[in-house]
Image (cartoon, rainbow, N blue to C red; front, side, top):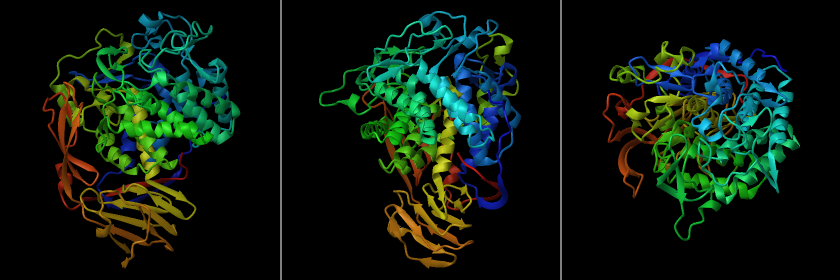
Length: 626
């Protein structure tokens, strides 16, 4: 088995004066604080599953089998955040996580180790009621797949050739235990204990196929197969391993079955261990939603499988699967306020946006665009500038207000080793809240979840990577965000000013995608002091024959506009929000939740000014990206 080796996070750091506007590298640096701060080195480097802020003494506690299942998400996020920011915080924690995770692999499977001293590690939600108790090691295939995703990330930042063997082995392990039926495969919901699709050391206890989507504690059978498809497709892309392609294809055919899709939410029939899943009523006449990827509950679980199906479809050139994901994505944008990145992930139940889903939405929008299935960069821009950064835990003052206004919280009955009350607010900065309304985190959701931190932080990376891409001496700017890179630096004055400055280092050709809200006739371009005619290619402005140290300045008007949006339409929970925008950035929203134990979003009056503040900061450009 591979030993933990040092990570290679080399790169160049330098000082620069930049606009004090959204820079995802700063969010990444803060995310490392949250990722490392919520990991417990005394419990095999497992993260604390829940963070409770609504308590006189905020606390974190271990959750269950999800802790071991989600720590690979943290392991995948660490390299992404470091490549963006250059932060060295918690490197020793990251090394410990890697070593601990690799030690869980045996016979090509990632295991949850049974320990009678910590019975909570072998449960998740109401799993004991659903599947009884177990007293042996078990593996959840989706957790093995998340482990594979970590290994694929490490390959880019570790000088460790044995990781190829680990990756191939994990694919073979997932394929070996899959149940085959006709031209598809699956993992049985009631196969063991600890969670749905749990595989005990002694083998499957039951191999029945799921009857519908809303089974298991999470209420999503496709969600329990999602990461296997995604990780297998990614491994096939870099290795050409036929076992990986076969596994991804067979699981995709299973997850695209009509029985898992379609329907409209039924508020009278809720499932899942938190009652957060609504069963689907029949769709109205003339609608075949099951063929188009329509969903009615737990969007994050659906989004993960859509991302997996898309990854498979691209490497296999499966046109039907590509179409399915595209239609599902477009349907999803009707389920909330996409202009701020808020999607109702639990319609007719909790009616909130799960933090996990923010990373999923960005991943879908970018990969669909990359695959040529549409141009969704404006969707991505709206999510990134708004809910992605707002749902990240960044405001110590608001957390302290919530704590001060709260009574005694929960979890006093948990054993000491399962709960941590030490400096929780500081350690949790950079994590993600579990759920939100369009205007903030309501009182009853003043807590964070490890899964959301793992997923949403990766959304930060997807947006950062997609914002500026380099190939040879050519650069493509897709998002007008602050960004440092090898070929050029981008300084964005948005949303204060309609101004973007590109400081060229070594590019000969730069293409800049212009957002939909910018009127083309109002754009002006200047290259090193000389006004230039605009050269359009689709939605991109193209600048060629550039020289080192050239400075491209783009200017255009930014108007403040107001729009109203209805959520939960035609239901008892219907509500209208009014949003003020400057370009893609929401600078104000109403109505607000005025409770002292809520965490408000969009307190952005300072962004209504017409002059961007400036600052001096250290920029970092990594030698390698993922």
